[in-house]
Length: 217
Ligand SMILES: [Zn+2]
Image (cartoon, rainbow, N blue to C red; front, side):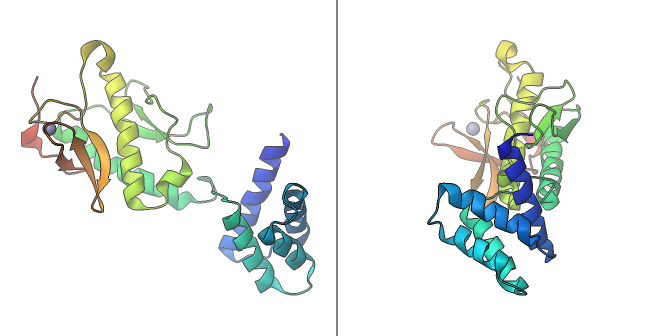
């Protein structure tokens, strides 16, 4: 285990303790703060964390110092530390499945965290395809709408790969009016499949693709 992953692991532990209101390991908190102060000696949140970790019997100060430090450092929990984020992705995938069925696709898709990049989640299709970008980061799933758009985009890529778009030109999901591929976007607080045809338009809400609008090649 290298230094960075060891530090990340200690930050994870600190995050979970703060989240659960559990007792924070003062020595660990102190070490984390000092590690950071080596590189950024004037960092206010790190200094406060170091001081709070050696101040006796002030759990509230230590907890708030730890929370402020994690925030200042831009700490992002992974799916292990924030399982509610993965749950959001699972719900989002149900919406995408509805659009698959509405457009006549019968294959299965699922969310995986592959050995080659276990921090992120990928949509894997019936044919084993996972798209061409880096998957879904835990930070993509901090709210329902972001999670929905991220899952829809990963599903779109993976499904197009399984439909062999590179040789067949098949796009998914295709706009019924233009036959063009659509992309998931957040618009006015809603996740939609957006088509760039004409001046651009909404094809459908994600999860509500009308079955009768299926584009037929
Ligand atoms: Zn269109």
